[in-house]
Length: 434
Image 1 (cartoon, rainbow, N blue to C red):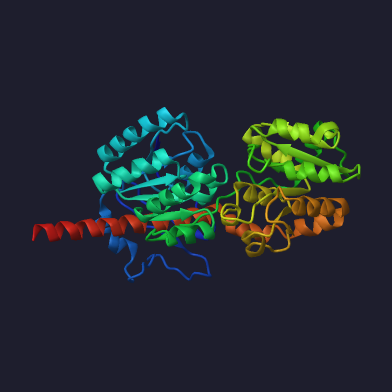
Image 2 (cartoon, rainbow, N blue to C red):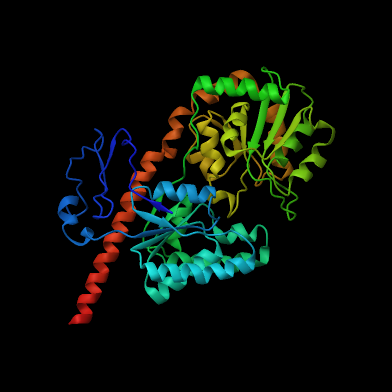
């Protein structure tokens, strides 16, 4: 799959000046705040036009790899982040162990055959990571890692004994890389601590930004389909409903537990998504299913925004540990894009991003009694006026999730990584010739 330089009109405040096969000029900013000029000054004062006359005149070769597999949301994100480059995505199947082992060899061969300036990997799956480590060691091909999770704690939450092993893998992956793209500033800091030589943050963006009239229409249609009155209060969540037997928890369980503590008839719970935990939610909700608890299951990704519009509160359950404290979750940008206030724990994002659109709850994790009791108390006393006040504070909070701004800084980051890698190669070749 080839992606030519994009032809979309530039985002207000930005001007894309990438030239596909002839090299790259970077992304210039022309808004009043930056006071930038058409010269696109770099760190040493040279304009990109002057720099392009040197090493950047060659064709830029960028390969992309999404370890969640071809067609995944991660691959879609990667395509957008690489939109300014002429690039190629490596086909990848997120499947059984045998298939992943075979893919390591195939990816290494493709990377060494293509000899790209850079490989950008979205995700930290072992098959993809191992392939890039081998290509780095045996072919000196530089790579960038983009991740939204702390790998060791992520695996350790499911398999405690493997946590330290995957932390070592994560450390090696960053240490051998040419840089990192963190989905949060906390992941970016972790990558730098683990040895990544440079890093940038790109937290993602909402897939859809419905207008106010669209949200109103979606709300009415979806509530009518679910049998929920317009004046009811709806708390919900959208995501993968994966059961964690260690904690007897999956997304949505905190909402169901809270609903069982609440007697008010005008409170409804909506859970959108499928997975191994859906049957557990059915059992836990019991007689409330279909009455005050609505377990929707899997829906097309384009319809998720319709269900979010039907909600008044979006649940963002995060544990206050090495996993939840580092992440935002893709749900956050989707909630804000749908104009949905958020309830979460006392994790870093709840302080760093709070501009009056969220509620923070006590309890170190969403499966604890402290958290679910606090959630029940909040929902039991929640009034429409309070929800509306939270909604009014959301617009400004979308700025960190602006797609154009993230594309611009990642484009500049990758261009400068490639430039430095080329300069280092020229320097090394010059030393060898002497």
